[in-house]
Image 1 (cartoon, chains in turn red, blue):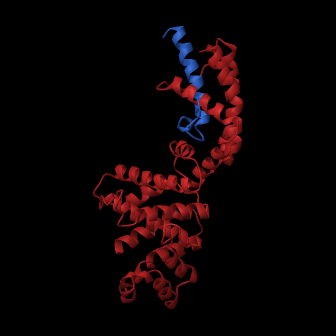
Image 2: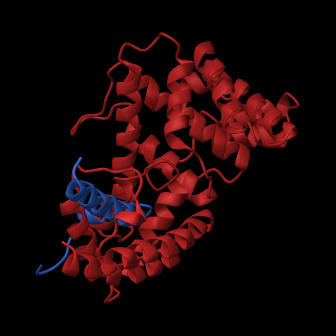
Image 3: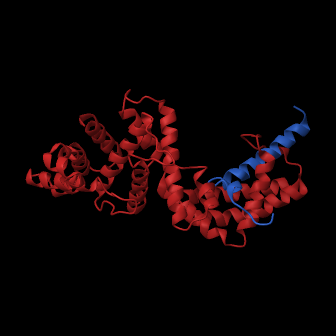
Amino acid sequence: MYDKVSRLIKLAGYLSKDLNGEFREKLQRAAFLCKADLLTEMVGEFPSLQGVMGREYALLDGESPEVAEAIYEHYLPTTGKGELPATDIGSLLSIADKIDSIVGCFGIGLIPTGTADPHALRRQALGVIGIILAKRLSLNLPALIGKSVELFNNRLTRGKDEIKGEVLEFIRARFQQRMISSGYSYDVIEAVTSINFIDLIDVFSRVKSLQEMKSHPDFEPLVITFKRIANIIDASWQEEVDPSLFKEEAEKALHDSYQRVGSRIHQLMEARDYAAILSHLTMLKPSVDRFFDEVL
Amino acid sequence: MCEDSKIKLNRLGLLRKAFSLFQVIADFSKIVTEGR
């Protein structure tokens, strides 16, 4: 229990490293106390009171209301679609607790199977996703998992890279499941999550934009253009393009178009305006099609 | 490397640049298209 709490304090500190000192102090205090009620006879007798009693004991002991509430909230959600933590401190502590549990179980080979998930790791992963999306927390998920793995020191029995990869994939599968149940198309979700699954707010924003664009008449031709390029450039790579080697007008036109559209897309990336990025990609399409028709 | 090869690689590089712009959002090859 002490090891768990020590890791939680550090992971909570990592999650709040850019936040103000008072918030961080309360979060780490809540992390320090959040499992204390598990050692009481009350919770031993009535396990469903875990967190509830922790909050009461904390208040009786003079802890701040924010710390006491976070102790209660860090267990939330207790069901797949249950109540989420309302406070920021409770939300971050809940994420830290769940990531620590998932990493710990994967780290010693306690990985859920198709028929068994005795440690409710799927629910915990869905909880992490639910909290991140509800609170719009921009987190680097692979880095958080990496930090959690690191905090276990040498207590895990499997390779660190293997654990990190499997935990991220486990969360990605739960994220896909959540998106499907929210009505998004599987192919859109797969297309988005397969290239970059780091910040769930960013991933969700791309899924929404792509799904909206999918019903637009320009979308399918755009996808076909992309697939044409993918078929040609597979396994070929060149860092720089030398405009002095262009022989055809269509090459120059594509290069000009790339520079113009590319510069705007990079600006839009800063604002994560994916709808506008998709709209700019459609502007690139005629030059690509011309390149295929006249050059290749 | 002969001139033709340089030109060809340059063209592929140009396509790769265009491809990279699509990939800021998604891997479009995973998108199911109908009839084509």
